[in-house]
View (tube, rainbow, N blue to C red):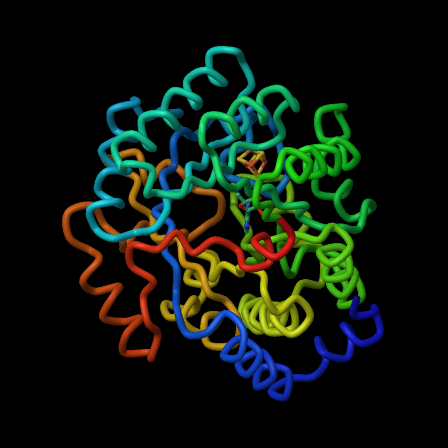
Length: 346
Ligand code: 5AD
Ligand code: SF4
């Protein structure tokens, strides 16, 4: 366990920490980038997070749900293109119908890829029974960000309406571990009133929770949300500063938890076109190109200026792969790229 003070000094360590992250990455997870084709199944959501563009009160967003067939077309595309895994993401919904539908999709993805595609789910807080059912149907991993491990800060970015409980979120994370998922969490960086100490504590939290995967991204205002107003009246880091701090967090986490999978997130790309490559250089090893089919992709807008896609169905991969290779990365084609940390844990 790397203690708080040491984490803090890594966060303050500038270039030195970036060099360490690069070195630790080389010596542990190596040079490979693993791909998860991201399928944004639906932007319907029962939650009302104050920062998010698809919160339920945002009536300006046309709501959509992909058909099973569209999801399976995307999954087959991923498999045939050599992606080791897909990640199915949606706003939070809970119903027996939804639970069964996801189980059915999992079953079909495993079938069409002859069990080769890994599947990550990112579908919000669900009952233990639902999570167990999806695990049994073939889900390998689950992503659920804690957003901030500081309870007060968490409460300041979620409505106090009984449906956004910090404790409930923790409980769901522990359920996932118990059910033997590979568990991923993460935080947003540069939130109103977030301090460097908060971020150091986030990394302590990741260690205590013994996570297998992590996704961290800069907070980016969405103009149609309540947190946008707060941000106007708060002394915020600039987007460029949030970018640099996120990269610093990635390198620090790589030093502290050398064998976890770390995603280079899309929100980094929203600030700088090659933002994800920067994160990959200092510690990240997973990339999630968006392969959501059809026209719905532009309706999954969590924040302003969200890049639409590049791992485009039917032809955007060549460019992405070339960019990764020109940055010196090897692509882990046809490999699930499971978390080394998880393998050791099990
Ligand atoms: N800026 C950055 N990230 C955001 N997310 C949601 N809204 C925003 C925003 N405005 C992130 C949250 C969530 C993930 C799916 O997207 O961390 O967990
Ligand atoms: Fe829903 Fe997730 Fe957005 Fe919160 S962050 S409103 S849970 S989609």
